[in-house]
Image (cartoon, rainbow, N blue to C red; front, side):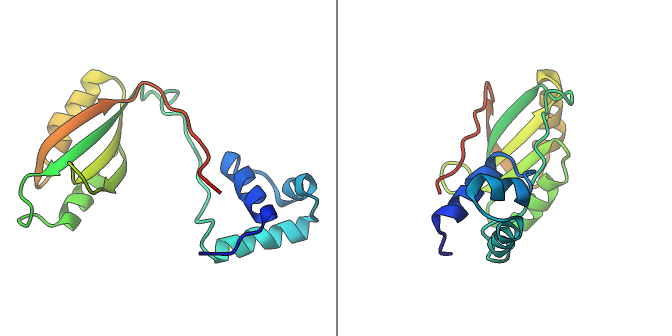
Length: 151
């Protein structure tokens, strides 16, 4: 674990809300110079605390009105490698995230589709034909609130 002071935590909170903020703007906000803020950010990146910055797209505005979380239980554990399944599912453009989890299901997927008929097409033609795909549970996303993680 990396030692973080209060200013590091403030910078991380601010960047987690809006990663496009400049070191200059962050420095003014927290009483630091631009170079001192930039050095702190670089140190946090070098330590692996900041692992990158992502662009968040609005799927609905891009024509993807349905988001579904799928729980997938592999039907043939041991006969199909996890790597084969992960490689195949990662090649499906509608699949946004692939998470290997512990519990009732082996994988949790976040899938976007234009509408429910489009999701059904993706489910039947792409996901259910994956190597080793067995039992599937679908949960349609109704709303989402993104909360900052604990710091």
